[in-house]
Amino acid sequence: MAIERTLSILKPDATTRNITGKINAIFEENGFRIIAQRRVLLTRSETERFYIIHKERPFYKDLCDFMSSAPVVVQVLEGENAILKNRAIMGATNPEEAAPGTIRALFGLSIDQNTVHGSDSAATAAQEIAFFFKETDIVG
Ligand code: ADP
Ligand code: MG
Image (cartoon, rainbow, N blue to C red; front, side, top):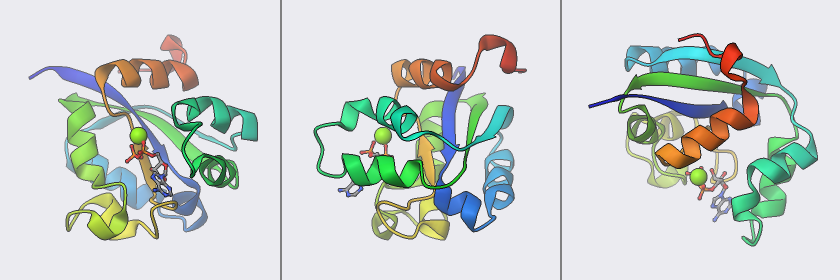
């Protein structure tokens, strides 16, 4: 299996509840290295661009409102099979459907406030990492 990099976001419900360290501990316990990390208050237009793939979906407006409502932590996780492994550690989009022990099962409040974002493919990971980080900001 290959060492991969994936983009992770700790969403506003994580920063406002002050649980970013607890979530980072889960990533590290699962063998990931956090090789870039920045706390940022995204503008509305940045969230619209980041989630442009969802622009026709009924939840797009609420998603962009939420993601620009309070700071987020954007980060690059590195590890074996990191993209799919992070999706497994995160759990299903709807916390009510997330497997026990996953981040969304442990901390997710609702399908909107589901605590974490993670890239869903190699192509998306490359694109999403480049959205937030210059190569020189990533120290592996
Ligand atoms: P994921 O974050 O698991 O990759 P998606 O890419 O499908 O999920 O959706 C992006 C985000 O949009 C989700 O994390 C969630 O916060 C929100 N979302 C997705 N589906 C819904 C929905 N049916 N109702 C409300 N919010 C949703
Ligand atoms: Mg997604």
